Image 1: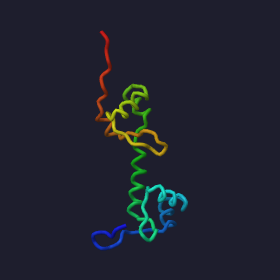
Image 2 (image 1 turned 30 degrees about the horizontal axis):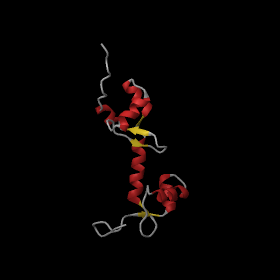
Image 3 (image 1 turned 60 degrees about the vertical axis):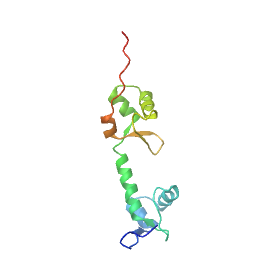
Length: 119
């Protein structure tokens, strides 16, 4: 980890301190480091800024919508929502269990393709 512009090293925490801050076990901190979700400095300690980013991402994830919620909002089948996402018409991100999650702002801006009406 490089030093900040002020010449000071970023704040770092021991794994035990990071675990207390998150309310998880040290093993979970170890797993997060191994998965690359949080960073460790050259001294092996957890970089506090990466911990804060991870906590913010987790908090943001609580406000994301699932496929079934988006489908209900538009009155379509879940498969239709997945197709929109696969065709990059509706932005999404992957959740913890690889599920599709949608930001409410993106869903609000999305205009679904009109349904085919036969005469």
